Amino acid sequence: MSLGMRIVIFITGTFLFLTILELVRKKKFREELSLVWLLVGFGIILASIADFVIDPLAFRLGISYPPALVFMVLFLLLVVVVLYFSVVVSDLKGRNKELSQKMALMEFRLNTLQKKD
Image (cartoon, rainbow, N blue to C red; front, side, top):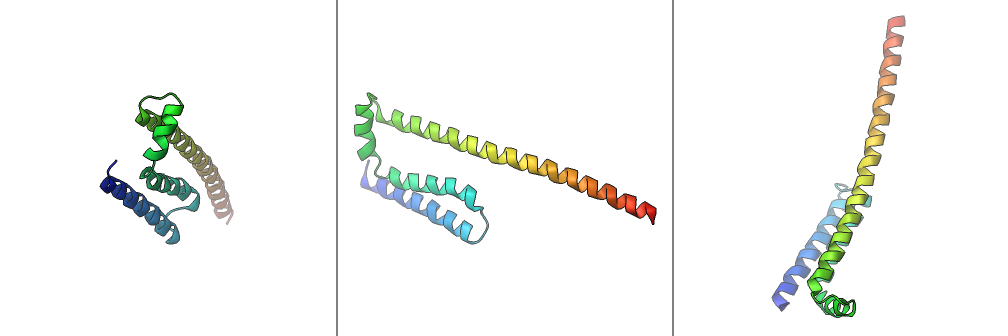
């Protein structure tokens, strides 16, 4: 990989990392969700020097085409991220249902009290 490409990848990862930190600081992004994106930014920063590690590791594992190892790792990471966000969405759906039920009960009680007066 050329030096210019390494610099572009490093700057992109640094920009993403700092942008996420700034969004968290301004309270526009929740902390628990930002951890995943901070790891992505850090991963992009590490990608600028990754070929020094990936090539020898791929050949030790018997993988003749080192980018295949990268795609396999990225695929596994994406599966973990999708699973994490699925858990978050499922939790939010449950909370939303619970809040809707509580609001319906409160409206019923309010209507009952208004009818008594």
